[in-house]
Length: 370
Image (tube, rainbow, N blue to C red; front, side, top):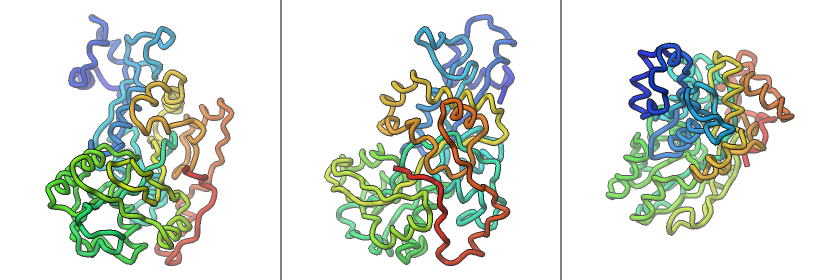
């Protein structure tokens, strides 16, 4: 989205990017720039640092050193920034509303938003969503204080549990998990808090636990485990199997022992974290962003910038996509010889959740997340 010099320069100054702009470049120079926002999540989760990393990978402000000379290999003239948000649900709404060019989102949230199903039932399907890439698996983490007397999901009834903020993908999945075990948010002493605030209350003993859907290790949880005895509650058994059989973008996974201090290996569910963009963005722009993401020079940044960055790989870029691929991204993958099988993404022809059976049929063809 091109910005005027007047609108862009204050943002560049705030971001400390003006140093890369040659003196006296003038109005024509500024008009060559493009500003690209990446919606993420709370600063205590994984989306924000990953979004910041992606912004660094794809940015290439005017005046930057050439890629061939060790400079940025991003999209020429593009300045990308990570923007903290409430999470997946908020990001798809902002993309649809035009206040974000792109955003990180759980595959399940993207799928339901595009079709107007599940938590989006009764709302207009957000058919302007397009995928750029599947990034990495996120674990549904149910973290509790070791002294809270919670060993299973059923023990959450009446407990002080944060289910994250309205607009977060975590809240969506918390409701899904609770329902599988015969509970609802209303059965808890529920709090709707960002992960950072929830962690601090757990540290003080004012909260028994929290749900968080994020890549592991999650910095906020690692920080909590360093000072407070915690446990992870397993999401497994017949209830977890029912979820994976109903929605193919969920997979069984294990959070390994040692991921958090003093916490044993724990079975749970995972879902793909995906990078979504607006269908209205130009094909050449998104092809350029996709090419920058998978440029060989980006590998070093991804591998060293965040633990989950190592899992962002071209081989899994098209796994478990919740929405159609953007034509610009498709053009890039086709040039790389990577096959993409399009789904019949037509929310008009699909029955709504209200019209489906109590346990909807499994939808095939989305690939494996792990």
